[in-house]
Length: 126
Image (cartoon, rainbow, N blue to C red; front, side, top):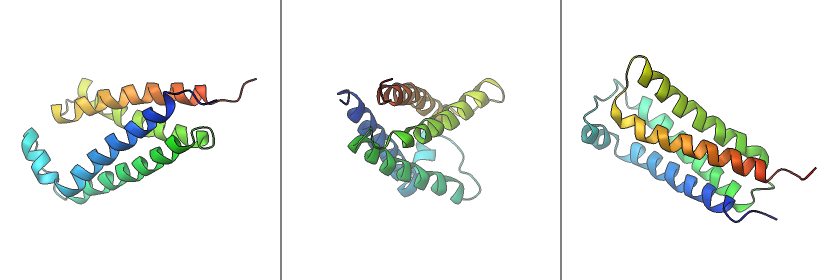
C-alpha cells in the first residue's frame, strides 16, 4: 500500500520545478532583473537548465502516478536536489552567491529529504 503523502510530494515537486523551469525559460531577463542579478553572457546558460527542470517535472509526475513502479527513478530526483542545493550551499560558504539562488536551495534540500523518505517507504518489505 502506498503511503498517502508520497504522491502529493512528487506532484508538488513537479509543479515547483515545472513552474520554476518555465519561468526561467520564458522570462529569464525579468527574473534576473527582479533579483538584481547580472545576466550571464549567453542565455543558453539559463535556458538549458530551465528545460532540464521541466523534464524533471515530467518525470516527477510519472513518479507521482505510480511511486512503487517508478521507485527506481526516485534517486535521479534526489540527485537533482543534491546537485543544486550542494552547489549553492558550497558557493554560499566559500565564494559567495547571489541571494536569488539560496531560497531554492533550501527548498531543494527539503525535497531531498522527502524524496529519500518516499524512496524508503516504497521499498519492498523484507
